[in-house]
Length: 290
Ligand code: SIN
Image (cartoon, rainbow, N blue to C red; front, top):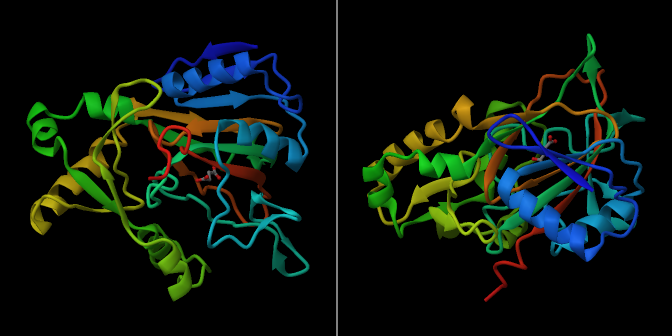
């Protein structure tokens, strides 16, 4: 296995590995370290069944079954389907997952470690891939915060709410998602996490707030919290912190949700099919439930 660093703030390509085969302990350890260091790893030219994708992903931690997800591989609810394809009048996957800046599962008590996506059909136009996935580096975003703000926010916590992103998609993106039911909301009540998280792999601090789910800095007045969050949301997506993964069919893409935030770019039309299988790995190895 060979890990080739990209010439950007984040990202590396992993070559000479077949993810359909069982992952050795040695390779697992190298990939875990690489996720902390590079934030985003891509594995080109993979050929996986849904079960092989699940078996690779589960090496990194517990797999989440999303409370609101209706689209998954038959018999394997941990393998979610992201797609804009409609068959016989019915969507076969979630068509608008992650289409704005966010961190997966920051609204959960046990936060997410990595997402593992397998690109089966990638929309292309004029020889260029569409529906790319963009990332921003939260180690760098923390480092480059003004010193006074680092001091002010040190030890503070942020509330994250699942319903924020859900409602934003409904309100601003014309999403056909129905409102969350009371039962779904009860399963995912708002939770708090430190605004600066010590990354369990790198041992360094990261900015752990995101525009998708973060709603309030708990220890500040409402007005100051709104002002600071507004600053953080702009600060953390500056171009210099970013990397954009340009999908190719057969790519497996995985990223560290603690050290990055991401955005699924929605620049393709309904007649340009995208079909991706996805596993969500939790950070239970690093933050065991209390
Ligand atoms: C996600 O947020 O997990 C979806 C990313 C993508 O579809 O590119």
